[in-house]
Image 1 (cartoon, rainbow, N blue to C red):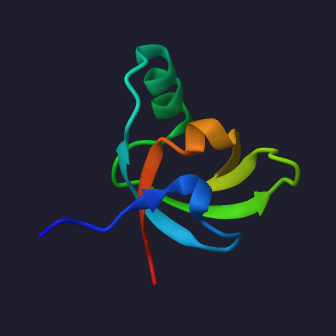
Image 2: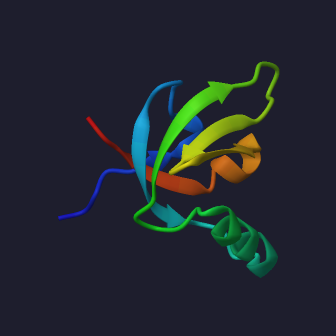
Length: 81
């Protein structure tokens, strides 16, 4: 059975999801995301979405990180109820 995933950039403020996959091949970016705590299995919550194509503020465990929409479009998550 395949898990239904959506890009992180499609979540709304307050939604929580589990990171399933990062569909990006650039090693430097992948290493950066892992350093921030973005890796499969991580639970995250969208705290804020800045207007005018600004960044998403993503809550990871005990901190909040800003993530650009372009990068967020390559991070696939499973929305939690």
